[in-house]
Image 1 (cartoon, helix red, strand yellow):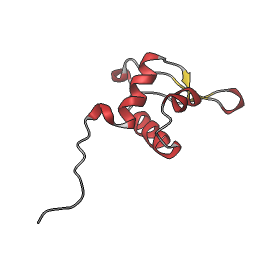
Image 2 (image 1 turned 90 degrees about the horizontal axis):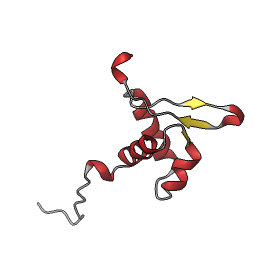
Image 3 (image 1 turned 180 degrees about the vertical axis):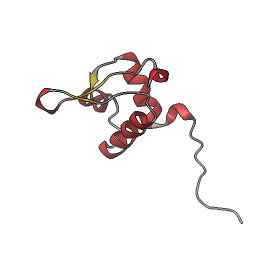
Image 4 (image 1 turned 135 degrees about the vertical axis):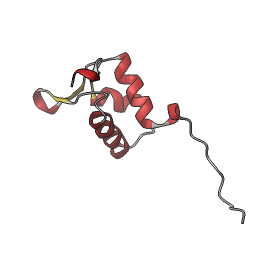
Length: 81
């Protein structure tokens, strides 16, 4: 059976999660709005899902600041936790 749907091969660096990780690694402590501005093609839903994954896998922290700003400090040493 052949499919009429095209096959899309995504490499790991094409995923929103990897792109978010790279942005936060380059600008630790940045705000969620900054990341969203750099990734206009990523929906807010996908952005939040990726952030939850990165937090759950202990690759970054989420810090709620004043006036509801969400900061994304990059976690340098995940082995200490």
